[in-house]
Length: 345
Image (tube, one colour):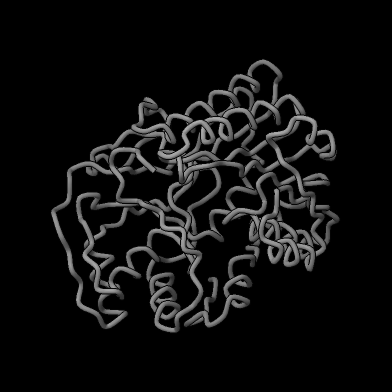
């Protein structure tokens, strides 16, 4: 049974937990040929995913060069990755001529995406989420690719349904979500026409202590801000679990590709989680509205059947988040806006 600390008191300790490989990943990483290319490695999940892969390879005793590709706007992220001997490759993937500097590879994790700001500049969202996949598929027609997608591509579903299955028609609201549908369709097109082995992972709300839906709820409770219950239920997954499953999904690539919902199998109640945070933080909880009968939810049974369920317990993460906020730990300042029901981000 995995042992977790009672509290996480520093970013160094947090990163250690986020990048600690489990035995399943250590065993799997031996099957991955070098190099492993991570596109979009400078975002919220990419740095810890890269270090998780490095630590798994070291634990497995295998040589695996990891190439982290991003524009790397934050120099501290670049320095942190370099401290783990991860190869840094600054690159603007919108520029087709830049792709020629990327190394040949048989395995790739695709983390590129643009979401927030869509309402103000929708053309940028469409360009990032559609042109870059086409560029990459042209550059790597036979590479094994795990491409991160979004749970936002589903319409709202009845809470009682247990969440959308991968067979659900993709008819979401909003330009961001529809650009994500188009991103998947482009990957599917190239996979079918070039034989590119591919798996699509539809992520529902990765969480750590510096951002995520649980942090959003806890911060509102701590600040005494009202919490709207209309979007009354949600999915979540610990970022460390999500990254491990993303890497292990290289075993699921296929042509034509299959899609998998990536999230924790237990749907959570906003009301229940907010009230629990009230207890942990010693604050009263202000709730407004009432739960709608529908929410943006996914059912991850397909991925859990293939790779196993995420291991991190909700209660542990909530305890960590409450302690983190009370100690005024650093936050990324990137709210999820999980309560949005009209697709406008």
